[in-house]
Length: 171
Ligand SMILES: [Zn+2]
Image (cartoon, rainbow, N blue to C red; front, side, top):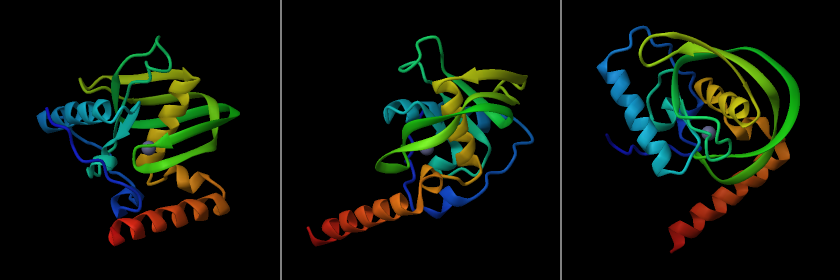
């Protein structure tokens, strides 16, 4: 297992749509293990493959720190098939440092995907698990929380980032 580097905004790979997986082989299962280790190392509750630079539709999630009833799992080619009830939720992202913003999400989602063992899975999620699933599926479509914020808030974040980089250059 290995801890991989997490790409940060504005890395261009975070803006690409990830590709469907057609065959689950040893490499995919290894990647899922590495993604899991990377997520735990960063104290995250979810991670998409594109965040470690792999353009494939894989997510890993473990929201048990916020919902003890949940457990670690990985989904391949996840797809949100239905969603209901809007909710405002404050969230951050391992690829968007120093940013906590209120994002419009859905309270409940139904998600379909494939397990690392190759089984078809359909699950109904609500609360934090539903939100984490939406966040990670967004990543697979090249969408970041910044894209779901108002233009003004996005601009404020970009300015903050620019100043931080400038400071780093000067020191
Ligand atoms: Zn994220």
